[in-house]
Length: 337
Image 1 (cartoon, rainbow, N blue to C red):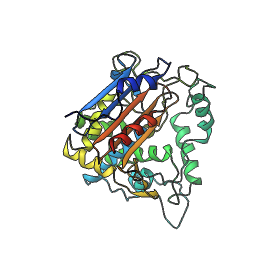
Image 2 (spheres, helix red, strand yellow; image 1 turned 135 degrees about the horizontal axis):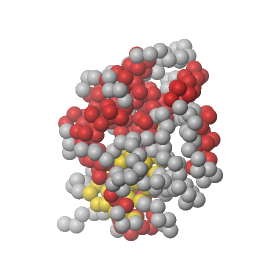
Image 3 (cartoon, rainbow, N blue to C red; image 1 turned 45 degrees about the vertical axis):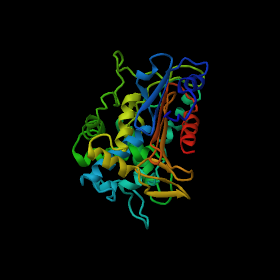
Image 4 (tube, rainbow, N blue to C red; image 1 turned 120 degrees about the vertical axis):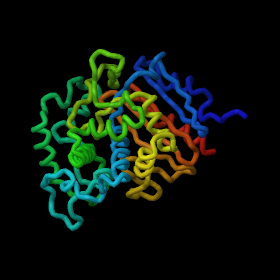
């Protein structure tokens, strides 16, 4: 029996998506029988590490799920209590934001600090190649975040926020006494899954060097090094993201699988048939629901999605902006027919 494929030829589809640019691109598709098909352009792209931007948030959501299922964390706890330090939230009828509010983007915080918003846009558009965070140290970041917190209106409505998920990562790390988000994530998620090429590191010279992203003008962009590691700083490869996806389908340590399944449950419905779990977005508006997250830095792009009904999943990593979601959508829609 011939296994149905979501695209006629994944390698051809990848080359077409890569276009004229030589910026590396890697795509992997999980079939319902648990096997994977991988393609890359140019040769060797499948083995490279890429910045994944906000797909980091999905990994942080898995971490929250693992800690919650283990009984180490209560997602309904206020962030301040978990962090162990009061924050200057406004008094509102709904009260202080909780961990789950950060995971579902209901803290009321903006996406990033106002000071760097236009800097980031300038780099992404190719107007600048300077690091938007070049002169913002930890103290200035924390002061800026406190100012944003003092103006926020938490728990009122959805507002996508890297600041909020970054705060979530800080709170989890403080609660578990891990010292850093990177260490906590490594101990509770990455090491158990064998994801040894995933981390916030950016080694200059080694086999684990992270591919440099390119902006829309094909110019190299700075690595993302902000103060919100839980929101966007991870780099990884296709093989590690495959391990993460497989855990959602039961292939991996049971505690990781339980935590991941918890992260993939709808926690807040944003509109009819569309909601958010622990950082993951969940789309029930199609015949076979798809759970997903996209990410991007100044140049790199990433996509991660899976369909529990079909057993299909898509991982796509690129060192420049390309419409990864469009290809993934084709794959999922073909699989649900």
